[in-house]
Image 1 (cartoon, helix red, strand yellow):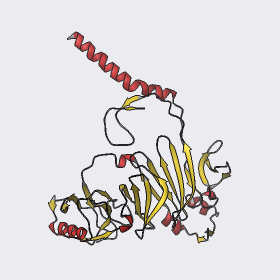
Image 2 (image 1 turned 90 degrees about the vertical axis):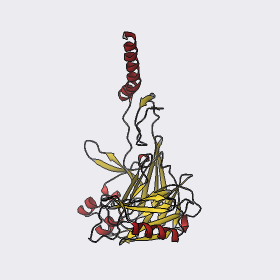
Image 3 (image 1 turned 60 degrees about the vertical axis):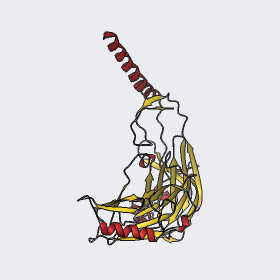
Length: 340
């Protein structure tokens, strides 16, 4: 027994050393590295980054090293620029108002751990036109089956037969072939409006489904016919200019505008491996797509969504030694894995 006990102790120590030893070494030897917050500027038409001042505070710097104040990013720092009296009356021929700035400013984020996880195929169903003035948390949810969808009242865990029949029929009448394959929505009351679901059927066709006053509103989106999709992102921006983003199997990135027209872009994005950040304003969308190798920035003009500029930052080579760990920023699973 003593021999077995020693073996278990030595084995535990070896596992602990293999697990924590490389981590401690990497913490001691790693050099801190971070990249500055960067946006495309509508006034100087270049990427502008936040950099520290000598002493305290920050400043804005373009790629050539030119230094600016907040006026180089008037849409992002609009409160400061307005307070200083530096906001121009118009930019690129468009009149500037504080309400217009707030309405068009947008942020959308996406991380691999948003989709790299197993989740029950239960979809919350919001009412887009509630009785009161504000959106309410969903009280119903639906599951998809081969012959339709079933809608449940979550409070009583009972089937709403009338809605189940109505929604299944509305989808079928518009050509939806069950079951649901991909579905994206933002079932939260903390937004200005609800755009419902963007979802694909078993044949890969794209649809939008919204609950309006308790009734289904279903629309097929033929612009996406022929695309093989791996991910869908519903945006619900304040200005309603975008319906969502569609990601193809080949990592191609498409924008679905408010008219449900499909607009291809120059961007490549793997939602299972890369992080995604959009910061938009009246004039440009700055997209940041990053992974462990670096970060790629795209500046797209609003309205046309043409790429006007790009920027790539490569991260320093990772010199840390391989180690055992159990979690990852790319998924929600807890399991042993070796980082290389």
